[in-house]
Amino acid sequence: MPGKLEELIENINGSDKDKITCIVADELLGWALEVAEKMQIKRAAVWSTAAALLALGFRILELLDDGIIKNNGTPTKNQMIKLSPTMPAISTTHFVWACIGDLATKKTFFEVIVKNNKSVAVADWLICNSTYELEPVVFTLFPNIMPVGPLLASNRLGNSAGYFWPKDSTCLEWLDQQPANSVIFVAFGSFTVFDQIQFQEFALGLELTNKPFLWVVWPDLTDDNNDAYPKGFIKRAATRGRIVGWAPQQKVLGHPSVACFLSHCGWNSTMEGLSNGIPFLCWPYFADQFFNQSYICDIWKVELGFNCDENGIVKQGEIKNKVEQLLNDKTFKARALDLKEVVSKSAKEEDRVVPKELLLPEAEVDCPNVRVVPKPNPVVLDVPKVGLLEAPNEESFDTPKTDVHVGSNMFGAPAPNASPPVPNPKAATQLCELIGALKAG
Image 1 (spheres, rainbow, N blue to C red):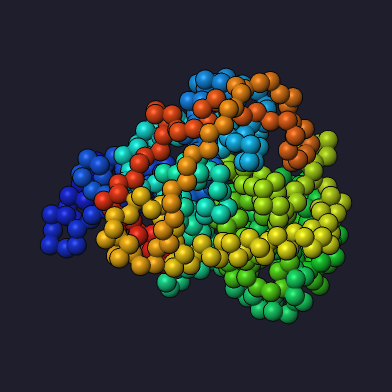
Image 2: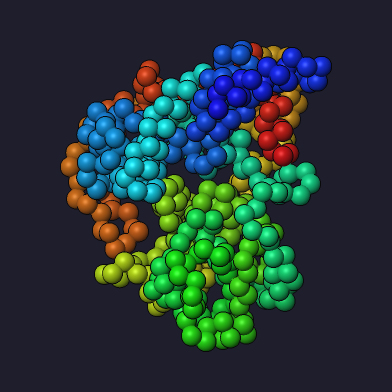
């Protein structure tokens, strides 16, 4: 792939057409950044999920030194750690590379992260689909990660494309017929798979709530599509529920009839829910979703999670109870609306934030819509080395009160061999244009 990309750029730049002067690549495609450096082209690395997870990747050497993970990324034990006292605790079993696929997949993903820590160092900019207001501690500790989020499909010009399945927009007409703040919207993303027992238990729990619901059930949501639903469920649910194969999610979340979002906690879904002031019921499945849940629940406090029984099943009664608890406690909705204001302000082009020292004097004229803020000073704390912990309760998503802080230098300047790149101040004008293009689609 690197050779093919280089060849493509050479062909385009050798023609009479417009030249490629900047490459924007996913942070996980570090080789593309290396190609851009080789060809002396400006380059921006994009991190599409929480900045805290990028920070976690940058701290892999400290995790190794403190004995929290082995050389292949496998956690040495199940314990809770924090990258700072004000960041959410995360179980070592929920490290993004530790909860994706089989052992071989975990090892490969870990190796990619380690390799990209080196590749991203050549980037002129490291930009993240988040906001300073949502993750202030991370952006203070890692000031070179630049927030440009939320990057929402609704901000694009024209219609969005690239959906896995055709959207069923008729569900919007169904929502028009429902009372305000009454509908449970259920969507588990593109990868979540339920076994037959959990799928049926979930369906019965949804029915028990006695609330109108819109449930996105794509073809592979269960591992057994034969008679997936409980007997008679479809007929009973038709009186107050709607089941679709895929939905226009942002439009659904922005509909006044939607009361809450029962979600897998993917970062895009998280940003979309926050942008519409919707409280969450969280059901994480893999990868970054467990960490995202800790933000939604423990830091932003707009969510409730579910507890499993002794067999690892979330029972129908638990689903009913958590829905009732979320909808009856108005503080969840109030906090969600507060966060909506914060996120909406960040999404406006005129409220873009760029650290002051990245801008040359002329850049402030060239980028009139940029709100210049001073670069925050790193927080310096005296943090003890890692100690031993009790393993967290596997039957609950609740975070234990005891936690571990990683590395004695975690809150000072990033370690030289693990730091994110320093953006090029001479490229400030291009940076403003890049952020504007990303927000406009």
